[in-house]
Length: 196
Image (cartoon, rainbow, N blue to C red):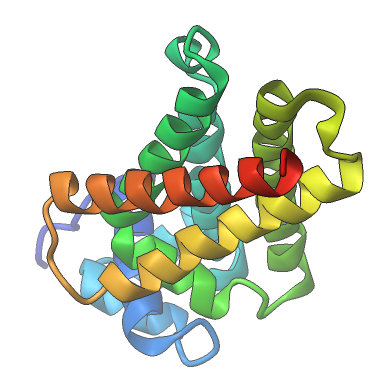
């Protein structure tokens, strides 16, 4: 009898991410994941009770990574405008460094109600963070509704740039410069609109 393969939950999660990315959530079977991992289904069930639980774990990891990134102390010590631009550059770098997971989440994230709840939480965190930074920049010149709207616009810019760069292999410096340029132009236009 062959030696049983031992695999950590983290390794199983990485294999799951790879298979979900190749097949999509609905077409992935647990047997696909365990075959790729070289383990038995029993090993899978020691770690997860379903493929849905594994996917939720991937979403939660993604959310926690974003929260960590956006709560770094140095952002709080920067000039407000610089902090907004820097936070979005870091966010974009996180998306690019986790390209497979980001693409998977954009594509499959709303496949189940439980996934949508986590994604809505991610959107809420990003929107509130951007809105708070916009308030720091513009004070009361923008209403809460306007700040939220502009926050969504910034999110749309980030997502569009991700989709543009997703299949290319730009350097971090290349996409960081592009993010900075786009956001600086956006803020310049916003300032001109607020202070005609």
